[in-house]
Image 1 (cartoon, rainbow, N blue to C red):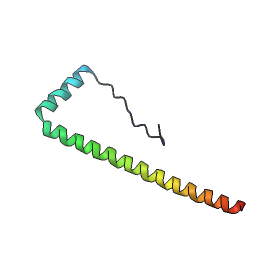
Image 2: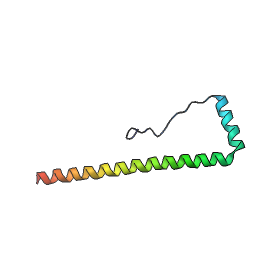
Image 3: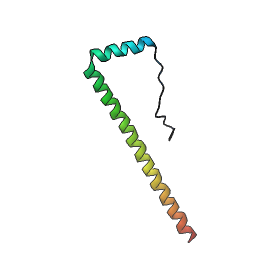
Amino acid sequence: MAGGVDMAEIIWKTKEEIEQEREVEIANPEQVMSKQIADLTIDNKKKDMLIQNLAKTVSELNIKVSQLEGGNA
């Protein structure tokens, strides 16, 4: 778990819920594909935000290290 974000989630479903989802997938494959694409897009945006936050943190830490090194010279 990095940065308080758990990338893996366990979702418990009943047999009936799984069967209903399969019926919907068979009935509307285009809708299912659109939802999957939307979900992947959201996941990618979340990862992009995490990467930006990490880059910012690394940059801030590099500045602090440089300041500390300059103070010890």
